[in-house]
Image (cartoon, rainbow, N blue to C red):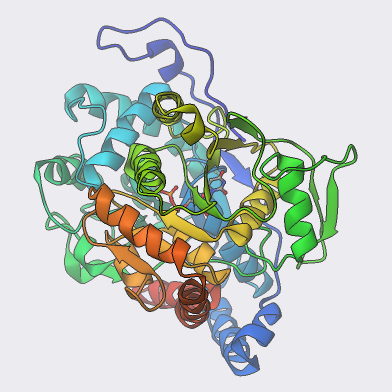
Length: 500
Ligand code: UDP
């Protein structure tokens, strides 16, 4: 886990020059091999055998080449969520897949967060994306590039993830690596923000032979569409985040965390994971609340997200408030959960967004406050954090994802796999993930709190319909969003790179 360092003296533009000169070093994250045979009961043996056959061909063709994945955080967000599983299966299949995390510092992550917002069509903190920002961005790439080149050999494949790593492409290509760039974000419509984001990134990406986007509509005009592949993200049904949990385990975890009434155990909660590892949940969450935790029988409306304005935590609170004020919430309570804000170092906004959510909560009347819980889940131990999210999603009566934009919402697919009815905004990749009214419910306009509250009222008030939607949601994920499909598309990508 990375934490931002202490603040140093500020430069003329407000950038922290002292830290800019010394971001933390590039780190390799160890990947444990995982057997894809686990998929047999879920997908059938034929698909698993086919994947093994494909991997054997690929292994032969790759020879000694390694396949590096590079991103900017080992903790928090969708990329960090997917890589351990995908690379773990690839390693078991004999592909030398590895994961590197680049170093960064607050000024750099300020610029990359600005880029993140721009590619989502929004202005973020409103700063420009000009020469000063480019200087900061490139200074950190100059720090990271030689460290990558100590590890990456000519001929190796390097898959760079998201704007944070795009600037490394030229140095890697020059050193003889075969580079692909995967973008996990995007916006369906082009506006000035989207244009400025892509103009910033274009110089680094022009010579990259393959791009990967989550939707075809995200391929920007600045890049050669002929080099773009579309690959949707996936989840791992056997990870701590998604494995089956017995009901008593769900309950024990949520009591331990402090999200359900009960007495936590001094020794914590332990249980065997789907991969044979021992899971353990000991730490409590930091919860902003008034009054006791919900009872086990209380229906919960849950959103799990990073503390990011695009996840619209204020809208989630406003929608739940509307539901209560209309008298349509029944006994339901709201849990808005995200990671401990001090832990996700490439997301500098977390603290401010959490504070805004807490202020919105404080402004409510006491009876409303008693039914809304804001939880920061500890991330000191990633498997523990994953088990907490798993239990919370499984226990939810309705999972919401009220995002204002979303390249692809992993939390949506995670909850669908748990047969939860999901209510989400009809934005970005979520429109592919959920078939409205069939495997979830979509709200057409993400800023329409009244429509969101009305749709929520129906799901809370009609448990049989909600359950049927949940069952179809699980089936949709089984068919489309599990890791084996994803690995097959990565194999296609390697073939496109013309390595052989
Ligand atoms: N997540 C987590 N712990 C938290 C909050 C979020 O593990 O406290 C995970 C969540 O379960 C999901 C990922 O972070 O796997 C977020 O991915 P998503 O695509 O939903 O959004 P992103 O953060 O990439 O914008």
